Image 1 (cartoon, rainbow, N blue to C red):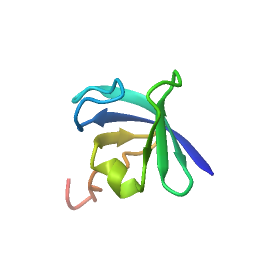
Image 2: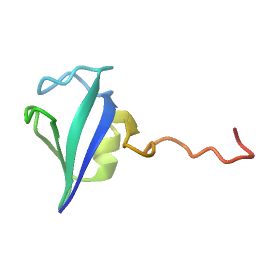
Image 3: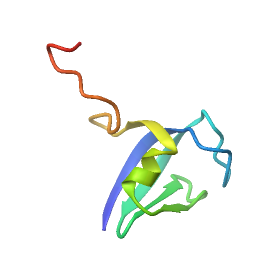
Image 4: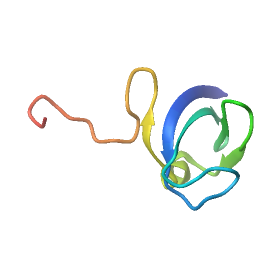
Length: 77
């Protein structure tokens, strides 16, 4: 099981204590789908796939790179 800690902005409908437009620090676990929860352990939410996760979250950032935003090459800055 892969686990990550990320920051992301919720863009879905308010649910499980997540509010649209707010940024959260999350723990993400990948195993037969994706499961997220806030760092404090609340707001656990399963997703069927990374694709379904991306439908509700954007601005996803790890310690080193942004996950779901277009890559800007030197020629496309």
